[in-house]
Length: 311
Image (tube, rainbow, N blue to C red; front, side, top):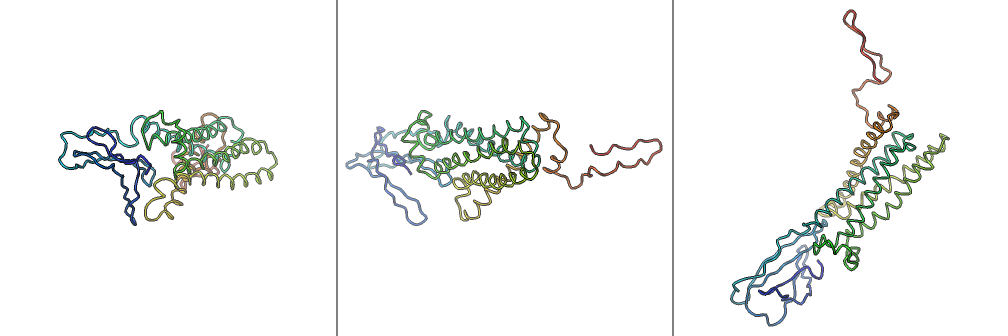
């Protein structure tokens, strides 16, 4: 609840409250009240409220009450849904772009490190993973700027209101987004080492040692970035957040490993067709697929040619 979360309007549309919010919460019941001005005349008053739910989404509503005889008319509250409008659309786009960037960054890095080390020196693969980092970083900045109008006024111009941004930074979601930006700084270092020092290593032992360090560090950073969603959204609410949040982190990492790895694999197949078969098999081996050493099946009909073996 913010300082302007509850507004009481008289029949003429003027504020009938003092702007002070009273905390009347008791146990698990969330209850807030507005302080009304003294000496209000008879008529129908409109109460408009807006708040941010525990899972980070804005919610709003309105109702009326009367003092003495109801008035002929009451204030019409805008029917725009909380978190809707142009700001809501932009916020939703940025939110899904952040997921896409995370998937490509984490899954792409894991695919190179685990399945295709030679891919660290392949330009199209490098560009794909770096674009994932840029997408996640840019969308996170947009989410941070749009957070205030998304949960408040709904006006795009308020994205550059420094007071609103300061208020956002003091919330759980603001802290999560800020933490994500800091972790993306560490992710940038991971990407630089992966496509720099690691790609240039020729000594097998040195390359293996560096891969181990990158694997540990990359896993910690990836889990931390995934945790910024788990700590601020749906997984952090409910009856068992201690179970839901770690599961949510594992879920995001699994999605990234599969979809991000698949994205980089497709890029490698189309843009760098020299990718080794072993890299594809490391990423996804079918249990029923014949191995590359299996001989071609023998023909059972006279004169028929043998089917070619796997290539």
